[in-house]
Length: 124
Image (cartoon, rainbow, N blue to C red; front, side):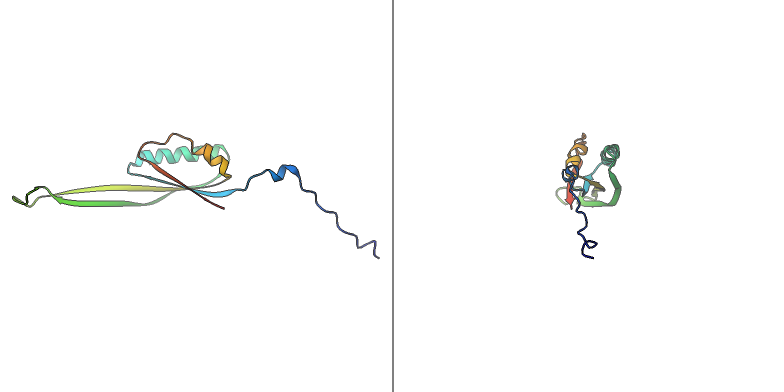
């Protein structure tokens, strides 16, 4: 009976699996005041990620932030009460990638238009 209760065979770790890097969730946040430039950068990022066969979620369009300033036209306060209204629209996009951190450097090395801010957050 004791021969039947032998130790099960142990698995030997393979060398190829140890060198694989861990896959992280990477969130790329794009911010700009120009819609065309932010959409172009976003499309380039997604195209580069799909060429590398990575999982991509997005672009997620966040609500546009509108900053408004109203000022009087006359500097001295005399004359008719006329006002100038200025506004700045800030557009924001999110792109989520599932990839090793080394490949993100290759993907984000695309040419980014001036006026587009890129923020990369890595979560495990």
